[in-house]
Length: 418
Image (cartoon, rainbow, N blue to C red; front, side, top):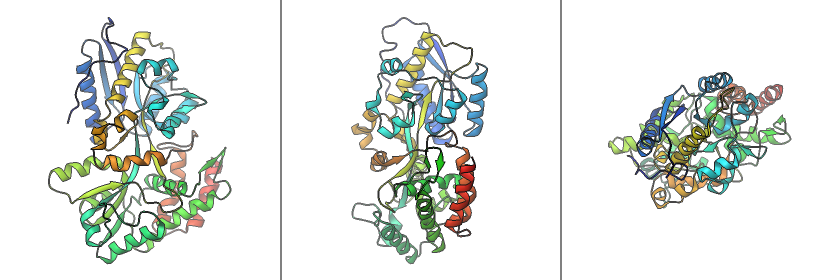
């Protein structure tokens, strides 16, 4: 699938420029990488003779961010790069991000009104913005309509029953088990880093927060973390959730029909879509997480575009305009990016008729009103210290080998020691 090419925006239209090369780094692999390469190709075609993106894909996670930090320190970072919103607080302490100024936003034809409040806040620090959101990528609940229908727990709307309370959803899981489904719910229970997303969502559903000021799990927030862990641990003990399952195995359990439902990121939508088109998958869907506690809430992060602060290397006005045009064009053409499962951050895209016809994306995109991002601290974010500490205790707890109260006590001590 490709997108229609459109004329360049106001930054370059009608102006005489020699061709600018924009050096680009990203960490996008798999389906994300395929789609971004297509967008880059389309951009280069639309801007032939004016701007050319010279793109390099680096290893996701810590290796990417370490290379950005060291490269920016010696003036060898790229002109533009992908960046997780959750990593921005740490990046600011390292001095590796340039501010996206009000003048930049005006040149790009973008503004705060174009983005969800939580998404905009995620790239903001002390009233200044340091990245441009491309998407939000939350976790969702994937489900097998065939198995749910067989167990009598598929609603008339084609979505799972029991999505409004812990008791009702647990009953749905139990009905699936009683109907002979081996794993009512597939979860990445062997990876505490991944399960942070689910646990943090359930904390937020209770109005809880991980960090208050500079302290972790203040007041009753420790109880809310314990409640979240207890729900997941109880499902494991009751045989309602897969145990010690790593990421690939979780996807395999769902796609093989051994698991009736799966909690995973929206980035697995292409996997399901491709299998379905090949006639190798059941009737499936994806929806916002069930409301287990008091209110809907789902963990999310954002892929964003950021401009590195290259030490000792001043970016020319012409180069900066080319970078801004690059960011603006990709963001405004992010309908194609949505085919990777992500929810485009640019509101005019998600409000378009084309996006509203895109399933299951349009069904779960409403969760952008209920999102929670990582705490704003250099300790948080993808592959950050908070993930590592909590992961050590999530795995034994979610697999029924450690009591939630004991896990929370240890987590609280280690987090505050950070």
